[in-house]
Length: 234
Image 1 (cartoon, rainbow, N blue to C red):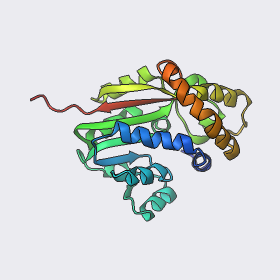
Image 2: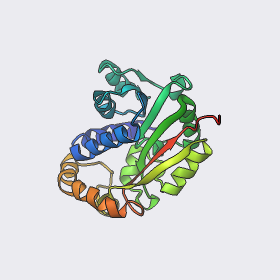
Image 3: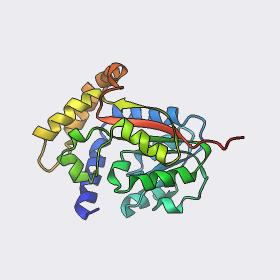
Image 4: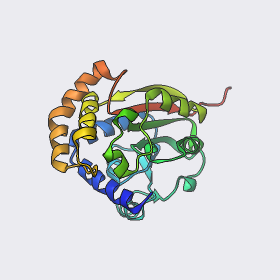
């Protein structure tokens, strides 16, 4: 990852703070999909926005974030933040969530295997990542995305890591069209504009959530998945 990628990713993280409906949706997804989990790990916690909100919902949250400035800010907020998954003890988490992170990693299957290791048997994994390589744009390049996923591809990788896949779907169906527009008509440098993010979040995202009830099996800007580390056979 280059310094330009880190800067671009941080700028876009800050722009996404403006997306209150989107962020609230993700918090609800985490809490729903990891219901019953107490000790959870936020892998790739970024600026700590979600770690803080999930902690407010009663979870015991630890974060993993390698970027030094972001890591320091999360620790300063009172949430324990490690710099590497290797620092997380095996079978020490009831749940793990990771939002828009796996697509940055060259060897994503090695990371999935490590996430499997840190979960207790019966522990749950929630992933939320960009969908459809067709949508890959200057924004993806700016923030260091290696790929975008289809649900079948993500499910297969989780199964190879040992997980049992329980649920998954696409999300933000209107965002698919918006991402196509961004690809062909957006800024050449891939930088997100905070005003455009706010406008989409307030006007389009609520409608997109309604359309997802019909479209989520087929299309969306993102894809999510819940999987579980199986318990040993008795």
